[in-house]
Image (tube, rainbow, N blue to C red):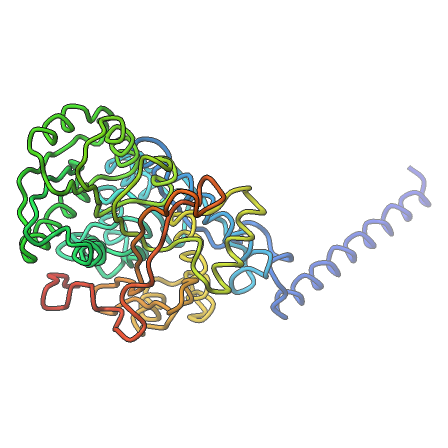
Length: 423
């Protein structure tokens, strides 16, 4: 190689090094100035481990949950992320309690997630809570409703977003009392045979007996059962005044459809029904009074904007599991931004100050400091009269918020004296 060639190559090397140094200085300056997530690498993202059932009798609800949390992630990242960092939400099928616990531990150890979120199955939520406590890491438990999770099995690392069983029963029970379907009535119950169903049946029976009703039958039904004809034959023989369902997921849909086919004359109500399951049951099959935590007809700017954006993105109306996952990620993002940290203890301290969050409802909600339960409004719904609605899916008639605007949000919730939760 000639001397001139060596000099040229040396000059190019020095020039290249200068460009690298200059680029590095520019990047460092951008980070120091707090530029948004677009200048940061994906490796610097805040990692959210998201577990929810995507198969089994709750799989359809988990599908809605994934749509809701992904939409929130995209909105938050488009707005600059959290503390200038993108959110990276990793969603997986929780499958069952044992698998949920294994995946939760793996997310902490291998995937290095900063927090866990999600779940609908109460039994799976219980095992994830145990993993969170063992690792001393935050778990925002979004969709499981068992009282036991907030009671005897509570821990300081878990916060609960959805309304618990007791609130559902009290909200639904008030509606049934107004319709004259409790006092002096003979009630036949159907209950899903897992943690949530057991809790729901216990609370429902307590309410019925306290208000002058009687329970003449209560059938425990396996979560994988799809044929309800044996139970419908028993109901026909018992001739109750009211059939009360303590079922979960697509069990409710299957029961309602088969009940319509049997043509039984008895009133039907339930202490648990998601709007997705109501839509799946279809108009003409569904009747009675049911509880819910949110619905798409709520007349607030937040709900209107969310529903419009969801319809534009996915081509369908969101149900309550899409909504609750959506607002939960926004709640978590706000907490991180205002606490200026993803540290578990700092986030717990922030939530325990009971700041109020926009849940796309008339009133804001907050986590109680002593049991970490979100206090918020609930609703009941029934079926509109034929001919009063245009869209095939728009056949549900929702109540005003419960509690009412002049009542405390804690009205329907277990009190500190009633709840055995101790951190």
